[in-house]
Amino acid sequence: MPTESASAPAAPAAPSGNVLVDLKRVRQAFRKADKGEHVVLDNVDLTISKGEIVGLLGRSGSGKSTLLRIVAGLSAPTSGAVQWCGRPVTGPCEGLSMVFQSFALFPWLTVLENVELGLEALGVPSTERRRRSLEAIDLIGLDGFENAYPKELSGGMRQRVGLARALVIHPQLMLMDEPFSALDVLTAETLRTDIIELWGEGKLPIGSILMVTHNIEEAVLMCDRILIFSVNPGRVAAEIQVDFPHPRNRLDPAFRQMVDDIYARMTNRASQAAASRLAGHHEAPPTTMATPLPEVSTNLMAGLLEEIASEPYNGKADLPHLADDLQMEADELFPVAEVLQMLGFADLADGDVKLTDAGRYFVESANDARKRVFRERLVARIPLAALIKSVLDERPSHRAPASRFLHQLDDHMTESYSERSLKAIVSWGRYAELFAYDDETEEFSLDDPG
Ligand code: ADP
Ligand code: MG
Image 1 (spheres, rainbow, N blue to C red):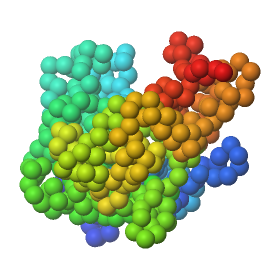
Image 2 (cartoon, rainbow, N blue to C red):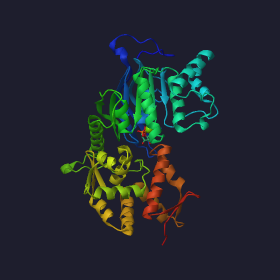
Image 3 (cartoon, rainbow, N blue to C red):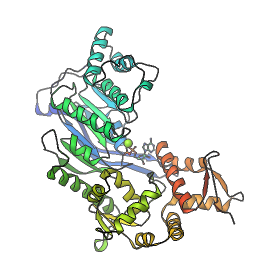
Image 4 (spheres, rainbow, N blue to C red):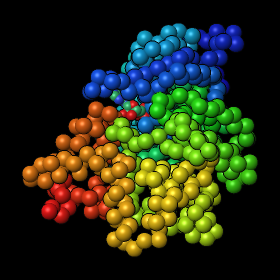
C-alpha cells in the first residue's frame, strides 16, 4: 500500500526498492562485569519489504527488543550491516515509528497532544498537525477522547493512543514491541482484530509492520511471515510463511497445525542449544545467573505436574493440547513448562512436556516431601537460589538486603528482568522454605536459623 510519508525520500521503482530494512550478519554483545561478553544477537540476517507484516517470535531474553532498537537506528550493533531504504543507518531512522509494550505516553499531555507530538518533531505546521492527529485518533477508535488524559483511559485505550501516535507520521515501517502483552486477553484480542481489519481495508497509513511477540497465536493470526528467534545467542532459527487469508480462524485445523509446528520448533531449538541430544534425550541449557526467571507460581507448577501425571496423559502431554484442556492460552503454559524444565521436574521436547523421575516423585509425595525436593532442586539448579542461600549461611546475621542480589543480576540482564527474576525466586524460596523474605524491609533471612 503506497503511503505518503512525512520524511522518507521517494522510493525508487527498481525491485530492490521494495526493501525497507536490510540487516546482514548483525551481532550484538554486551560486556559483562567480569570482563567476559554476553552475546545477545549472533549473525542475524533480516529483510523487511514494503507491504508486509512480519512477526519476530522468541522467548523472553532472546534479544527481540535489542534487535528492534537496532532496526530503528536507536542503537548500533557491535558488528554487521544495517540498511534502511538502501542506505546505511547512522542514527534514528526517519519514516519509522515504534509502539511500546508500556504505552510510553506523557501523562501531562492530552490524547490529542500526545498524538501531535510525533508530527511536531517532523516540523509539520500546526493546522496540518491537528488535522492529521484527529484523523488518526478517529481511525483508531478514540473519537471523543481527544481531550482526555492518559490516566483517565483504560489500558486498551492507552495502547490505542500509542498506535495513533505511531501511525500519525504515516511511517513506512511501524515497529511494535509486544504491543498487546500488557493488556488483558479480551482487550488485546479486540485491538488485534481492529488492526488487522484496518490493515486489510488499506486504511492504515503504514507501509509495513514488524511486530515482536512471544505469543505464537498472535503471530499466526496477524503476520505474513514469522521469524523464529532462538535464544542464547539470538539468531533467526526458522522462517515461516503464513498464507491463510484474513480474517483468520484460530480453530481452523490448518491454523492449529501451524501453531503446533511452531511450538515444536521452539522447544526443539531450546533443547538443541544444549547440544546434548544423546540417545534422543533432550536437555535444556543449564540455568545460569544470566537466565531470566519467569514469575510462575508454585501452585501453578504443582497443578501442571499433577495434570501431566494424571489421565489421559500419564506423564507425557502435548503442550497445545494440554493448554486446551486447562483452558489456558498455550503461551501462558509455556513459561510454566519452562520452569519445570529448569528445575528438572519435566523435559520439553518437540512440543511435548514429559515428567522426569523427580517430577513424578513430587506428584506422589505429601506436602513436606514436596517442599524438600523443591528446595533441593532450587539449590542444585538455580544459581540465584544457591547464591542467596550461601550468602545467608555465611553472614553472622543470616540476613541480606534484596539490593545485594539485584546489583549482581544487573550485570547479566536489564533491570526489569532482574526485578522479575528476584520476585520469582522470592516466591519459590518461600514455598520451599529455603529462606524468608520481608516485603517491608526488602530483606532476605534464613527461614529457620539454626
Ligand atoms: P527480549 O526482548 O527478547 O526479551 P532483550 O532484547 O530485551 O530480549 O534482551 C536480551 C538480552 O540482552 C537480555 O539477557 C538482556 O539482559 C540483555 N541486554 C539487553 N540490553 C542490554 C544492555 N544495554 N546491556 C547489557 N545487556 C543487555
Ligand atoms: Mg523485549
